[in-house]
Image 1: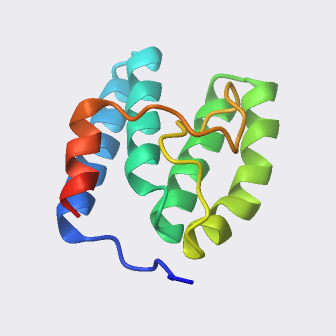
Image 2 (image 1 turned 90 degrees about the vertical axis):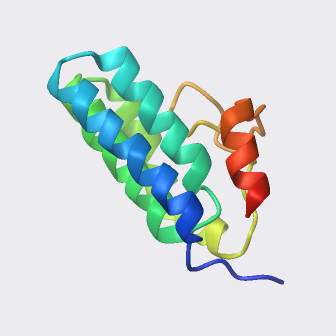
Length: 120
């Protein structure tokens, strides 16, 4: 079994960029685009427990901000088990991480993110 702990720097740069773009859009109250950047950060972070859990934390806070009970309740179990699944390499590849999709459903990865992940 392979354990995942340290996100490769090349992926981390793109991950941080998505989080920065999230912050920018959130500050401008562009919630749909802000959420899209959180989803993209989630796809990049899935394999690494710290980064994966952090995105779910941000998703929980987003759900609180927009007063979405569904998102809040959906993020709590993801926060509790997402990082563990990352650590042992058991993730649904491409899953966007929101409560609007089943937590174990693999999804198609956007081509640009697929290229980033394939490089590492």
